[in-house]
Every structure is written in structure tokens, then in C-alpha cells.
Length: 160
View 1: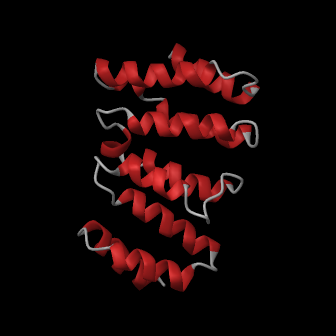
View 2 (view 1 turned 60 degrees about the vertical axis):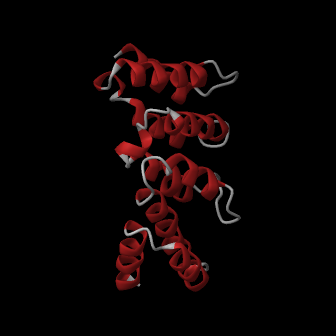
């Protein structure tokens, strides 16, 4: 499996992974931990222009569930680990993460608050990106019934 993961990763990086995605899934679909890696690698190897779109497609996959914190982190967390994709000038990375954090908060406020940390470095970026991030943070904060954990984390990030 380790060698297959490495080969799968190389194929994705080379842009030749379309068939490998289906083949790897077919072989490993019943192993939830390996499937987490399948989700992660697709996001990590997406081009910066395609990262948010890849996450959107994967969150529509039948095996994606936000009720599984590991699967949520494997997919959305991978986006935050791809700086060029997450901080793309379009702001789509920020928007998709914020959308999912808003959905996750009522189910799992601890994971939501922890995932908000992806925005902690927002002041290191240019004014355009800072404004895009601030907009998403304020949108999350304005969510009715937002948990105490997430409210505290977002407030702390904005005040920094």
C-alpha cells in the first residue's frame, strides 16, 4: 500500500492520475484510513487554480462525510496545507473552507474551532487576501447559533 500511495502521488503530481484515482479507489474503498489518504492526495496535488474545485468535487463524493472528523480534515485540511491553493487570489479556498466550517459547527464545534486556525496567519498576506479572509471570518462569526468554541477562535484571530 505504501508503494501504491507513492506511485499514486507521483501520477497525480505529473497530471496523469485520472485513471489512478479510479483504480486506487476501487482497490482501497473499504479501508477508511487509506481512503482518507486518497482524499488528501488529490487535494494536495491539485494545481493552485484547481484546488478549491477539487475540494468541491470531493465533498460531493459519496464517501465524504463531515460527520467523520478524519475525513473532514483529510479533505478540507489538505486544502489548508496547500498554500498556493488555499491562498489563491480568487479567494475560493477561503470561501469553501468557511462554507464547510459553518456547516460543521453545529455537529462538531471542537473540530470547527481547530480548523479555523488555518486563518491565523491572515495578516501575513497582501491587503487583497487579508480582505478576503476577513470577509470569510466575519461571515462565520455572523452565523446564528455559532458555538462558543468557534466564536472564541474567530474573535481571537480577528483581534490579533
